[in-house]
Length: 219
Image (cartoon, rainbow, N blue to C red; front, side):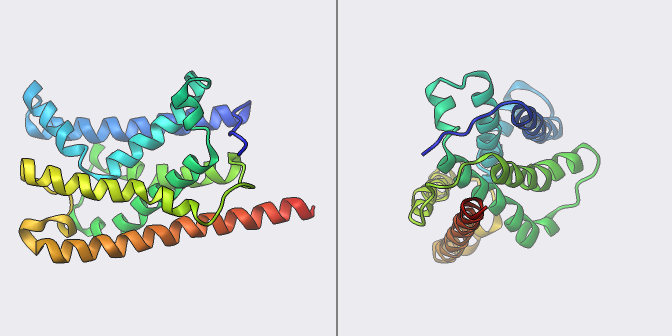
């Protein structure tokens, strides 16, 4: 599969979107640290808690996928994040962030000021722009339907990670993953539904990619 080539405007676009992704993460962490008091211990705790959120881990993966190919394109991480399959899987994952937040979580809080800006960045702007970035820069000729199951390992691994860390530290990032409130059966049902929804998003990306490839071949 052809690696993503970042030259000219693509590099500028990746750099600009990378700045937005890092800014969203920094503002989210900074706001949490300020709210907790600002000590070193508070800061570490905020980081630990924040890394339990699918929103933060996925925005972090997006930020890395945009930054590392620019600063170290020939390194192993740089080559990894230039793989079309990796970027497509991340596009499906960050789209899931935006959709689940809008449908299930947006009404849970009413952010203001810096919190509102970070909320818009990590839940709306970065997801939307990254999907556009994927569409514009990613070679799609080798994407296959079964690739969705490889990408599914990320949300699956996240789910296992969240349940284990929840048992260890007593904190669950989302109400629908809180086994202390709704029990394991309800959590597993939510995970199943969200997992199926992720696969639908992934297959939608692959389907759109195949349409784009066919149009390019026919022109």
